[in-house]
Image 1 (spheres, one colour):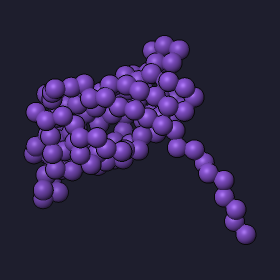
Image 2 (cartoon, one colour; image 1 turned 90 degrees about the vertical axis):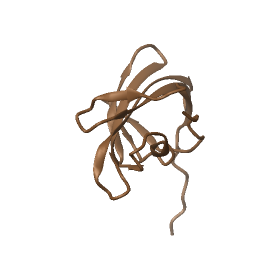
Image 3 (cartoon, helix red, strand yellow; image 1 turned 120 degrees about the vertical axis):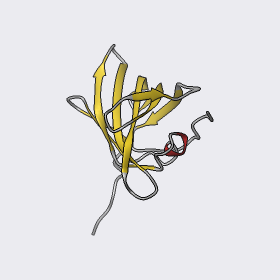
Image 4 (cartoon, helix red, strand yellow; image 1 turned 60 degrees about the horizontal axis):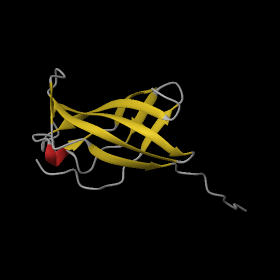
Length: 123
């Protein structure tokens, strides 16, 4: 199994424990027969003063657009300051009944940075 290629993705950790994320552009190639994924949804929990765990899933499709399973990511992160985090994630491919098998060599590392509102001048 190849390592997960470095890539950018958009993940929102919403107050109350909801995680929303865009499709993963580089993971499906690692979890055939999935060739693309839908948006991801899941949940997070605080485990320490600056530590959190999270799990999210997305529906996976084959080359014809037929749902063939789920991609599931489970991870742990630690805030490194007010606007950044670092962590590790485990990746699994699941069938349509959510019977999953992990992929390795993982965990994959992840780094995050808060997207801030930029000032704008609109006439």
